[in-house]
Image 1 (cartoon, rainbow, N blue to C red):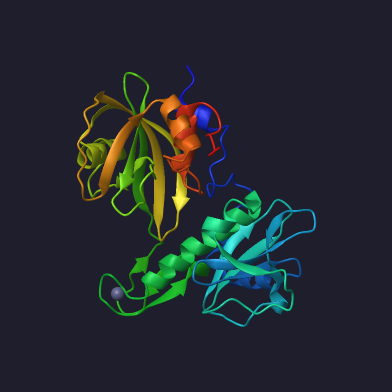
Image 2: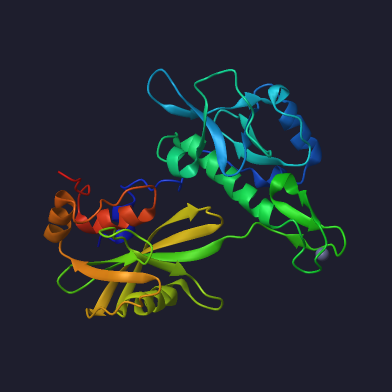
Length: 312
Ligand SMILES: [Zn+2]
């Protein structure tokens, strides 16, 4: 039997990476190794600031992360993140700074993950997602959640340590579920959030609550947002979503009752679409195309069975 996960494996999910970088976590507490890695001539460094890094377009039409050797990097001891090693043995570090460095090279421009995620190579995308996620966490966890004192960076950016009470804090990831609900007629349920423009529809989504399984979170969120009861729930794929610290867990879910009653707080409108209705809606402009880097478009595409239509 072909599962949704098998089918999803053929659809690349932006930001998810394919493991081209070995994070080499066992080196993070080894200061001597880190110092040697930092000063190695092949080591590459980039600056991350406010979720952005410098990228540039190459002559052959690709977009690359702008990296530099460590001897060219801005001076900082404190906010240095070790990101890992690629297949050629190159070590990568990110520096968190208050601003991106100025460049003589006019081709370089600042870009965040929403733009760069779809343009960068697997390797560069993995590096930038990791660096941005660490930066977000570091920025929001400067104080100890146990005693309130200031924390300091450790483990090459992967721990914050409290010098007052000794607590070690690890980067947090907030699980969120995102699901495409289908019914017995194989229609898909898409919703419009309260703040979205008319015609913009996407999958339902929400955060997993404390003490809740991810499957139960799918059932609860669909019931809360759209009033639809869901039976079977099948995991498909996940996507790091460091805006600032989520992990999107993608599901297909099957409705046992198709009646829709939106909550009016998060979701303004929810509708069942046949494939023909979605295609004609997008082609006529009545429905805005699902674009961007989110796994939502991939889930809808999986159900749709081929690349999603574009406006005519
Ligand atoms: Zn503390």
